[in-house]
Amino acid sequence: MGTKIKIEFDEMNVQESVTYILSTEYGLKPNVLKAEIKDDSSGIMILTLEGDQSKIDEAAEGLRSKGFTVSSLERHILRDKARCFSCGACLSLCPTKSFTFDEKTWEVHLDIDTCIACGSCVTGCPVKALRLNL
Ligand code: SF4
Ligand code: SF4
Image 1 (cartoon, protein in one colour):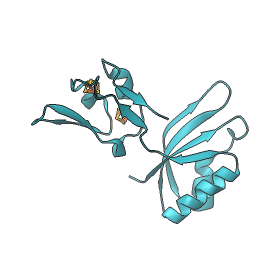
Image 2: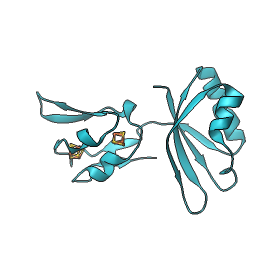
Image 3: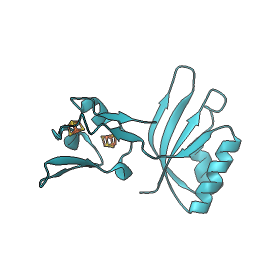
């Protein structure tokens, strides 16, 4: 599935083509999972990168030197277990099948590693138990 990273940019570097840099300068295969840009031209991009870890580290440093903020994606989706009542609505909403239903316990589980931060479950959860932390 590749290494998931978050890149933050602002009006100074919004015009730079991150995917072009990653592929041509570092030989990586980037796949953009999500990109959001605000009115002030700042924003975030979530990508998976395929390639050698040494090249990924090198690329992250290279992007930082161009003014981007680069970080690994960890705990990017949060679930409030006190609110979640395992209704299962999120199972059908998730494109990566990150939710599973445990028939023994009747509980819904979330696999954060496969989550691509699309946000579908966040808007679809009836009790707002899910939140993207990007
Ligand atoms: S939709 Fe919300 S309440 Fe229902 S199982 Fe998913 S997280 Fe829990
Ligand atoms: S944010 Fe998208 S990919 Fe992640 S768990 Fe929710 S529906 Fe699935």
